[in-house]
Length: 291
Image (cartoon, rainbow, N blue to C red; front, side):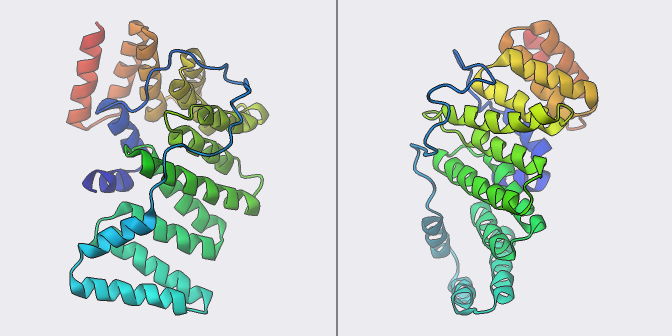
């Protein structure tokens, strides 16, 4: 759980760096449908072949490892949720459970789960956004297929609830599409295209939405559309020249394309925004391997 805790605390930027510089998780694709294409399989049925994490089983397993005193404490909190007939009381208990699993028992899935349960009851744009983004940020670094499937699925549900409250929220629409991209199991590549299509709805209406352009660039890498990926990411770094995430993704995309000159260019450009010596050392190693 220590790795997950680091990802949660450090946020999406550190997560990106960990993913792409200390173990790639996105496979190179041999072929892919055009970015805007909807093939006969790209709509999909929305179901993953990978079984999703059973969060109740996770809860039971973690409970067994606690001291009797902590087990009694948690059992009383869980009973309070069941007994509570006042919504505010239930929300408060869910936040207590979330805090326990985050701070005292180091289970990030359970922390996110209870945070999400509270957000569903609160049903506010702020709470739903916070919980949904916890799922999205952590699914990007998750290696276990079942946990990835669960996180992506729960994130989708929360972003959909958020869009019911705020239909014009383009950031939520892009994030929803991103859940499809990052949560797509290897046996369901059409889910990546579903995510791209959702983000394209925003990008086609507002070409200056750099969040959409960034996620389309990442989606291009995931789906093997490297020419589209570099095009999108080049646009982001033109608009946001200090966007480290876009810079490093662009370098990675060019490296995957076999364009060593541009890969070196963008790895070098990213160095000036980094202070972590371990990451800088890895970037230097990559640059040398490309020379």
